[in-house]
Length: 310
Image (cartoon, rainbow, N blue to C red):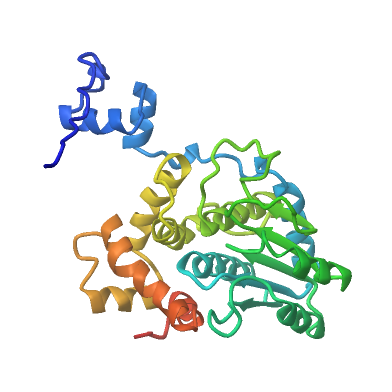
């Protein structure tokens, strides 16, 4: 026989001044929303409420290193994980480099079956042979101590952009962006890898003085939102803002590959919802990496605007 547990009733005076129906008040209550201000932020996300990316631990050092590499035309590798989050994070850096006219970079997404997860000694040796100056890992890297030690010894700087838990033995990277570090004081700690990549690009735009429209970075929100939902990150605080506005960008995306995917899935006429991303788009971005070659998903998201991917 089943035992049903009935949730407690919300207090009679809970957010009575919010002017929302009882159902909305119940949902807010059970999501831990305590004040009218919190409720308004939850129901009406404000893009201007995003925190300063330069307040993230090591962001000033990491962004300065990337800007120096751009200015000196150093060889950069973006090393991304093969899941949707890693692919989207790689896309974010790709789009930024292309926008500012920087071409001396490559995207490296390992084959899941042949190379496995994260950096390997073999790939570090390849980067050494290719005379790479800077490796930026996205959605991976925080556990690759020995591999990064080898890269450092070879004169390759490594920047880690990761959102996984930090091990006791921290890699000797040039800089680590991971909000789970003990000394981290940034108030929100649950970005996806692509979300943290987006924050990094915002820091670069803030420091770099690039001649572009100040709102250009919002066009990256489609893949930031896709990754946030695909990686099942909590849709609270800054993630809620990124996803709220990212869904709007997904609706009017400029990405030819996504437009073709929408057409195939018969999506877009009535808007793109979180469910559409979670159950239709994200699995199709993820499947390429699970089958072995995540580069197909990367190509889908970055294909030139004059071509179509099917």
